[in-house]
Every structure is written in C-alpha cells, then in structure tokens.
Amino acid sequence: MTELDPTKLPRHLAIIMDGNGRWAEQRMLRRIVGHQRGVETVRMVVEQASRLGIGYLTLFAFSSENWSRPKTEVRALMTLLQKYIRIETGRMMKNNIRFNVIGNRNDLPREVNQILDEALQQTARNTGMVLTLALSYGGRQEIVRAAVRLAEEVRTGGLAPERITEELFARHLDTVGLPDPDLLIRTSGEMRISNFLLWQLAYAELYFTDINWPDLTIDQLYRALADYQARERRFGKTSAQLIGRN
Ligand code: IPE
Ligand code: IPE
Ligand code: MG
Image 1 (cartoon, rainbow, N blue to C red):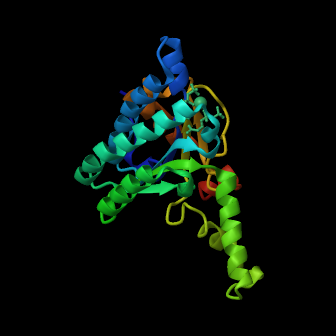
Image 2: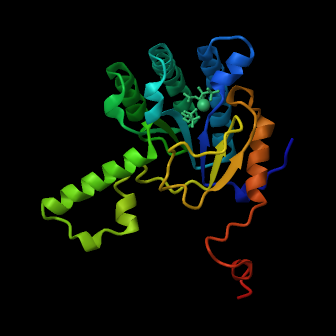
C-alpha cells in the first residue's frame, strides 16, 4: 500500500467522478449500472477521506450541463441520488460527517431537495469532515449568481462597488465557508475541468488518472494523495523563497 505523510494531506480534496458510463458500456451493461457501481466508489472514498482526517471532500456528482443527457439517464441519476442520501445519512452521523450541497438546487426535483434538506439538518452539528456534493452545479453559473447577488446589494444601497474584493466575492459563492481545494482528482482519462469550481481551483494541484470511477481502488486514491505530497506548491513565489532562503 502506498505510504502517506499524515501531516501533508490536502485540507480540501475535490473530485470529478467520471467514467461511469464508459465503465458500463465496456461491459455491455446499461450506463445506469455504471452509476450504481460508482456509488460504491463514493462510499469508499468518503470513508477513506474521513479516516485520513481530510477536512473537506467535494464530489462533482451532477453538472448543470448533465441536464441535457437523455431523460431516462437523468431520471435514473436523480433516483439513485435520493437512495444514496437516504442510506448514507446514517453513516454520516456515525462518522461525524457534515453534509453540504453546492449548485443550483432550484432545478432539482422536489423529492430530491426534501431528502437533501433532511440530510443537511441531521448532520448540521457534526464536527468531522465536510462532505459537499456538487449537484446541478456549474462554475460559471455559480459566479454569475454571486455577481447578481453583489449587484443587488449595490443597487439597494448597502454596498459600494469599490468594496468588492476577492474575499467578498468568494463569500457570495456557493462554497462560502469552504477553503479552496488543494487537490483535484479526475478519473477516466479526460483532462479538463468541465465547469467545476472555476474560481476555487485557481491554485489547486491537478491529478488525472485513466481509471474509470467505478474501478478506482483505495490504493489508487492513496497514489493520487502521495503524488500531491511530492509536489511543491509555489503560489507564484520561487523555490528559494519557500524554503526560507530568500
Ligand atoms: C460521471 O460518469 C457521472 C456523471 C457525469 C453523472 P459519466 O456518466 O460522465 O461517464 P462517461 O464519461 O460517460 O463514461
Ligand atoms: C463532469 O463529467 C460532471 C460530473 C462528473 C458530474 P462529464 O462527463 O459531464 O464531463 P464532460 O461532458 O465529459 O466534459
Ligand atoms: Mg463523463
């Protein structure tokens, strides 16, 4: 098993869980079977991240753009989501996990929103890992929503435009209260961001693997974390500055 330095774990791990459809198609199965198997990987990753002491885990589960998939797949995904949340809430309580959602919840079916609200309420006082699901989420849409809210505050007179800073802007995003991700993992070999956390990923380390999401193992997750631990995050500075030689 890959060795990890427990003092150098990402504080916030974000994941684009991709490749469920291809996993199924390669096995002549329906795409939804891939999504079902994907849920098992979600369970594994949530458990591992929480055990390792990662503070924040954010999973891209359904994008704004995913609404344009065939209706049958969208419906099946919504049903699977409801089932997952209902079953997982108990486990979140047991593991002291606080549940969180980002994205445009107005577009989600009412039954899904109901279950999400229950999970949010039940886990609200938990103090362990924050598990955020990005649902009906798009980075550009989120930035526009933040801009609209700020414009509204300016219009109603409470806010002077020159007081809009990066910090204030970030506080109007869905991710308010979450630190920026330190590491982004994407499975299935695609090397793109697909409209995920555009603002927040500014300085994230990126890790891509060819493995499809349902096939991801604990050791592959650990390898991604070990790869992250070997990187030097410079944030625009020089290496010498980072080791205090300058
Ligand atoms: C990721 O798997 C899950 C969602 C986007 C809901 P995909 O469904 O995108 O799988 P591929 O990319 O078609 O293989
Ligand atoms: C991104 O995956 C969204 C999720 C993982 C939920 P997609 O499969 O939708 O991304 P593209 O369309 O290949 O870029
Ligand atoms: Mg995909």
